[in-house]
Image 1 (cartoon, protein in one colour):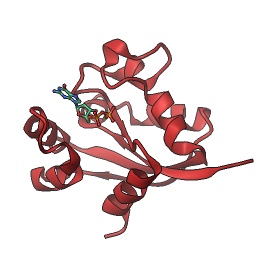
Image 2 (tube, rainbow, N blue to C red):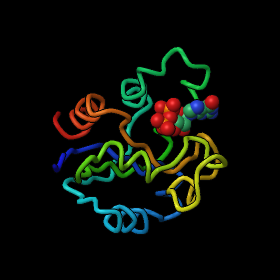
Image 3 (tube, rainbow, N blue to C red):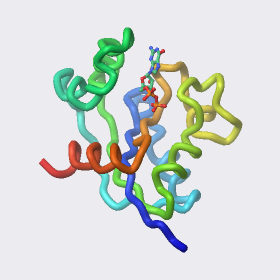
Image 4 (cartoon, rainbow, N blue to C red):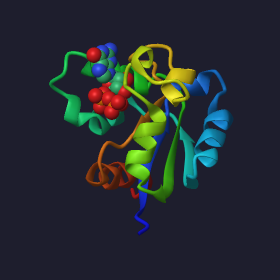
Length: 136
Ligand code: GDP
């Protein structure tokens, strides 16, 4: 049975800076994702703080928000069956050094903070995150 979902993907500043967005979008399409919506934006530190609010108690919160707002990003609505989990699989582990071969973070990631892509980690968060970027 098909289980079509939408999830939020972000191509982070390190990847946009290296002009990897077309390559990464090709990776999504080659892995069965349809890019339903897409925009290139540069968010403020305050917007990044709202986006990453779940991490506000973490020691890396300030660096994380400074980083996401440090340059342009590409935000996308991705769709396919089991999109949330399939995108997490395609992205690979948070730390590129631990990510499996063939994953986006292994291919493009530089470090745990400059790990090239973000993807929602649950269907519930996907709805919240898509709303954050596309419905306001
Ligand atoms: P993700 O869902 O795989 O992106 O990982 P998390 O939701 O746990 O963390 C959000 C983002 O915070 C990650 O993508 C990393 O860029 C960053 N991050 C996570 N853990 C660490 C850490 O220990 N140190 C630093 N500097 N950044 C981290």
